[in-house]
Amino acid sequence: MEAAPSSSSTSTSTSTGGSVTFYDFLDRMRNPASLDLVRSIKSFIVSFSFYTPNPDNDGKKVQDFYLSMEAAIREHPLWAAATFEELDSAMEGLEKYVMTKLFSRTFASVPEDAKIDREVSEKICLLQNFLKPEHLDIPAVLHNEASWLLAEKELQKINTFKAPREKLLCIMNCCRVINNLLLNASMSENHALAGLDDFLPVLIYVTIKAKLVSEAAYYFTNLVSAKTFIVDLNGKSLSMDEIKFEESMQAARLTQTNRATQIEASPTLQGQTDPTLTRMHDKEKDTSGGSSYPYMDAEAGELTVGDVERLLSLYKDVVTKYTSLYKVVRHLSMSKTEIPHSEGTSFLLTQPEGTNTKIDHQRGN
Image 1 (spheres, rainbow, N blue to C red):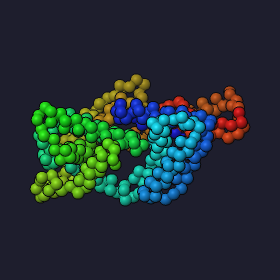
Image 2: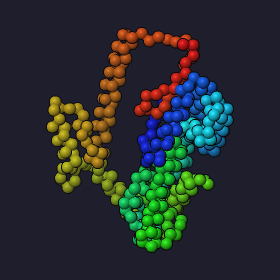
Image 3: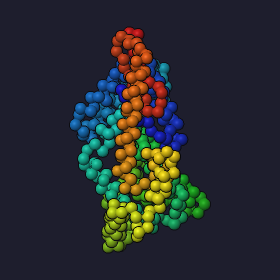
Image 4: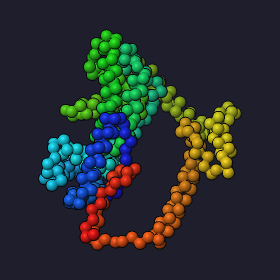
């Protein structure tokens, strides 16, 4: 089974415990005694891709697989003396591996879901141009840009993860920042907490600006409420005159359209050369030996739409050179070293990229 892409950490609570859990799962799967489990995992992932995407059926298939694997793990010799926490950690590791492998197949795999995501994203982009805290009736005492920015950053990390539990942790971290803001306001500003009436408007505002029974389920439910609010959002929702709201949305659309037109039309404005392009061209001239890669020292904010074509060309050039070099090195290595072949079958389960450990079961050495 091929490696699943690794995830960067969202915070201490997201990364440390999750990584230990996942590596422990991989470590046990590396044991030859787990061969039957590895076969089951590989078989499920391969067979899942043959089904036509269906959110309801897909969810049931995954849950049924988890239940069968949980029973198999509980009865397996490797977990014979395992505690409840260790079994839970094993299932968490299994979930992360399986859902990372099936991410593109299970998240927004249906056209209807992808369409809704695009519509919500477009509406958020427009709202970002004029939405203010007062439109959501957020009390002035809760206007804290530093806390809002921190909450936004935590929520934005959600797209760097593929496992559901890790995505929930990103939501929880965001909501905890908001909860701390409410708590500090109640203690230092004598603000009487209004519960959800205070919490949800701030979450909605943070969600727009950031482009279950358990705590995780509670926060997830609130995020769903925030999304629903945004989908149905109108002038009345924002304590704003409906005509003014529509005018603001239309003005935001025109601003985006004009901005895109200006960028595509010319890299210069009012006859003045774009300083970003000038800096990048200067870097290209200053590079000793006339480097073919002028973007090596560029910052993300310096790039423009006009750079895309050249960046693509440079990317293809790098990949071509790397592929050619890899083939040469591999040919030289194979010609110098004879690799012994062991009889039997080899089963491979690897962990996320960026690590060196493999789960490799071999028989008949």
